[in-house]
Amino acid sequence: MRRLAAHLQSSDLVARFQRACGLYPAAGAEENSVHNHRQDDHSRQHRDAGVVHRHRSKEGTVQLSGGTREQDNNSNYTCSVSGSAENYVVRNRSLYFLFLVSAALGNEVFYISFLPCLHWNLDPFLCRRLVNMWAVVMYIGQVLKDVLKLPRPLAPPVVKLETRVAAEYGLPSTHAMAATAISFTLLLSAPERVQFQWEVGVFLAVLLSTLVCLSRLYTGMHSALDVICGVLIAAVVMATSYPLWAWFDRVQLHGRCSPVLAVALPLLLCYCYPGLDHYSTTRGDTTMILGGASGCWLGYWLNERLGVTFEPAGPLLLLLPVPLPSLTCVTFALGAARFAVGLLVLVGTRQSVRWASLALVCRCYGESPGDREARRRKEIEVPYKFMTYGAMGLVNTVLVNRLFLLLGLL
Image (cartoon, rainbow, N blue to C red; front, side):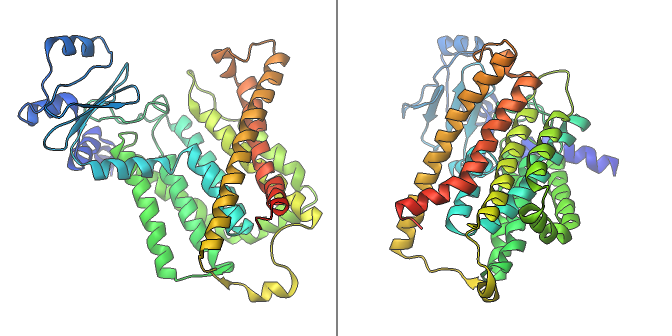
């Protein structure tokens, strides 16, 4: 078992997967591609100095953000970015873009667009279930990373396509956990509300989670062991919590202490997050997730108190599950309009509350909001990020739907 774990944790295994998918380090690619990309002495000096450079080819160069992309007759291209390890050759562009898009499904941009879109265009009930499970598995995964402290794959031999989370530890993969939790929570919850073909739902859930998991190997950010453990941990959390989902719905919407728990419990978990001897983005990311979940929790409770839950009640409950509505030009246009307006409101909320909360917290501690090191301190990072994303969750659940009513989008 120990030998199998060591094999799955191996950086060489990740590197072989990358090579099988057509992703190579630039230097290795030059040795194995009959010198399709040649460098002159001036370019090599710039590369050694860690600056952006160009490879010469018959087809010319295509500009990238922070670097260049070169294309040759074999449709390969090389990327080089100043001061980073992003220096690689791609021989299969289809897989390259597929896995980059799949990796983005575990990032902030996806969460603040997909989850609210589900609330606005399908069913707040499903969004609530997803947000709850997403917050639980992400907190468990982030804490395990900083407790176990197992390293990410080594580069070389691995090519790393992301740099923001390079300082984080590896096991488990929270991308794999989140993708598994979101996909299968939606699959298990949707039959209570809508009618759909179960086989199609299973296929889509497996496909989405598999693509995200493989993308973590392709981008060089996780080992196979990280990904497998992430999936298994998410599955265990879902299996053990599934009998409690309906009970927690009732507590969340009707409990007397629900608004207190909505704020106090996530905030306490953020402050109790395990500390490290160096700065890592895990605490800040976890605070953002729990802050958003806290705002949504408080918003759903408030909607229930105001009697505007946008959910069926009384005799209408007997009609559930209902068939999925047909997609027409009108419904598509309304859905797109809701998505655009809602996302604009959320982005505006994020920017304004972030600025105000950061200024307020920094003023309390006598620090400048522009001081990067000060923003990383727990007493500053936790409250300003929690307030920012808590406000986004509250706006998403309470104000945006009322704005849709005023604009005639519902």
